Image (tube, rainbow, N blue to C red):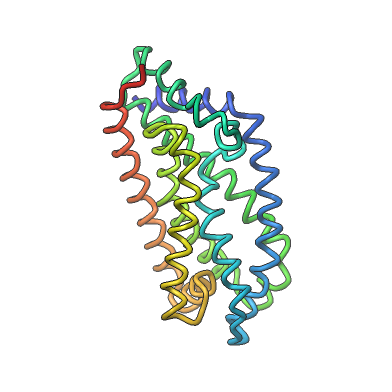
Length: 246
């Protein structure tokens, strides 16, 4: 099953190679935009200053961008309103379901594609951040602390990344386009509640955690990420076994 899933994932990545490349290029742009605001947060943690408008923006960028790195977000279904009517992911899965391929293999292949995409786009994202902020990062932080910070956010992205796959193949085109707005509304509510009780931004808190706690918090975040990934994989498997694609 694993070999078949890897082969199927490889074919899927080949099919999306152009949009994957475009997603990498757009990720470079997102990273450049993020670096502009992250620079101030890195300094805030050291200087004990609080600049509210800055940490709201950087929190929003990290909370939205990092999970999206688990999806080929520049593929047509994500950027075309025709997805609402055409529902291309369901049509593609209907073709797979008509073939002698087990549901477990199909679900595993989707998860492998998600993990591969997350790793690839995360490398692109954090490489630009590191290059853009190298002076600030390595003036105030050790390499270990910076890697811990990255691992914390990769764990978060991994925990939610499987949700992208579930929405693509477990729901429909309408929900795929509706979900970003629901996510934004949810995050704004979270931010409102969080900022009511905490003075530091979420990203700034993760910077503090990376400095004060170290690798245990990174390991915990990655573990939670793996649990989340397993949860969404299991949910997708069950959904594929029940959903009628014909």
